[in-house]
Image 1 (cartoon, rainbow, N blue to C red):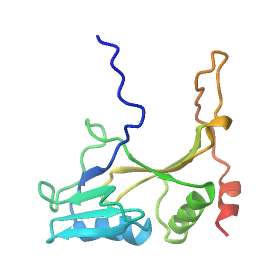
Image 2 (cartoon, rainbow, N blue to C red):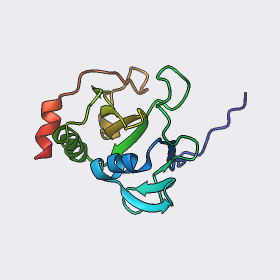
Image 3 (tube, helix red, strand yellow):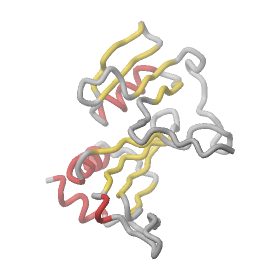
Image 4 (tube, rainbow, N blue to C red):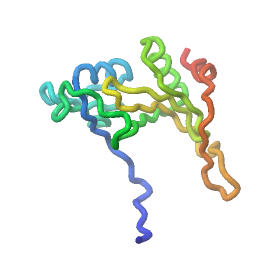
Length: 162
């Protein structure tokens, strides 16, 4: 196998999700999480973003209109991770979920980040998180990243939401 390395500035540009009900997904991603609707393609697809980008998330019903969620134990996307710029931004998003009584399925401190886990209306996994500054990331003796999964200090996080 070659030692080719993808360019360091490469980024994941967007995710495109199959959904069963476009409006219900827009209510979740735009109404609850706060994404901006950039474009609708009739009643079958939508492109949404943060900050005016052409789209971070595509939603469509082309092959999935009114379909049940994919089986939990089948190959596919585990979750879409949405990176917030600051810890306070994550706190505000989590408080919105709590206020809306939206189910949170997990929360973790990974050392490099703090994360909240939930499912969208089609049971697609969603991670809401913020990264700690790289200078604070836990390291092993060789200098490599030493991520972990510990309980999240939810009270400390939510204190920033107010």
